[in-house]
Image 1 (cartoon, rainbow, N blue to C red):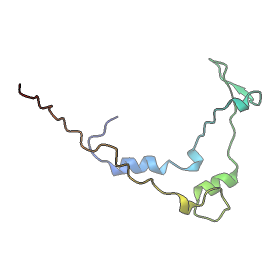
Image 2 (image 1 turned 30 degrees about the vertical axis):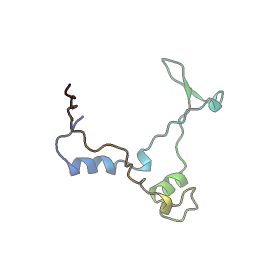
Image 3 (image 1 turned 180 degrees about the horizontal axis):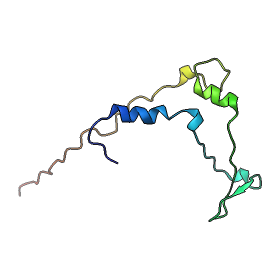
Length: 99
C-alpha cells in the first residue's frame, strides 16, 4: 500500500497493537528436529506452538523496570543515520562530450 498523506490516527491504531500480548515469534532451526509436537498439513513441516511465560510478557511490557532482564532498557536506542543511504533521487542527464 502507498499512502499519499500522513494519517497519524491510523498509524497510532497499528502502533497501539504492537504489544507483547500480540507478538508472535518464529524460530527456525534444525536443532528442534524430533522435539516438535505438531505438523503442518500441506508440507508436513513439524512445529510447536507455545505461550510465553507471564514473567516474560511482563518484562517485555515494561523493560524500564529492574526485572533483571537480559538487556537494560537504557542500552536500547536507534542506530546513527547511515550517511551512505541516498536521499536525492533526482534523475541527472549524462553530459555527452563533443567531438
